[in-house]
Length: 37
Length: 265
Image (cartoon, rainbow over all chains, first blue to last red; front, side):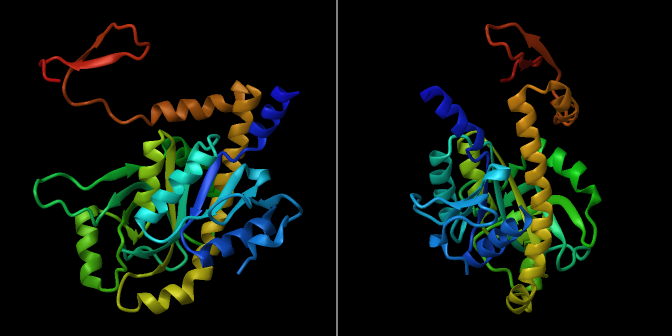
């Protein structure tokens, strides 16, 4: 079960880190993500 | 502003990660963490390193934000994908060395070039981006940086993110939306044009994230037929061979080692 748990986590763990330096830009992108998915 | 304490959002596919030292949302559908990385190269590098340490699964760091144009062919709302990020404020005076340059992740660039062809309404340039902790607000300074770096736009944090990624042997990419022309109107233009620049940038980012998540699925599922064309394109995009004539040397390492025929190492 433990192995299965690790596999399940690795299947959804972030593969891409998107860095938006400032709060305003980060908020704009976050809202856009939520609208898109 | 978004309240990071608000919990699940966006059809429950985006979740905030509360145990981190900085605001960060995990978009499950894209296997993407969207983090606020801080202002300036150093802060961005520190926070990128922290995130890479927290997410060993990370394979690509993407630095996104606004930029000032150094190229008259670029307009407000256009988006630049960095084939290279050049650190323009690395002022070495005791020795003569080229400016630090960080190549964009070749595989991601190749996939993005192909996948972004269908986008319209703004120009997408694949070119060099200058990076440095400086607001560029005069045409003369903009021209100086352009001449120094060959970049088509200038921004702040890209080289910090790229350094952190390179330190961890993972790929990086910088994507910037144009808000201004790096001249005296830049401070006002930046605020006025940030929404359109970020909206266009997101359209391209969405293409990248969708493409990358499909690619990751192909890798995970072992669908070699699906990923074979990508690999073929990546191999064909390798940099040219060195100008010095070389010969192959057998060694225990599986990667062929090349040594110059003239004996220099």
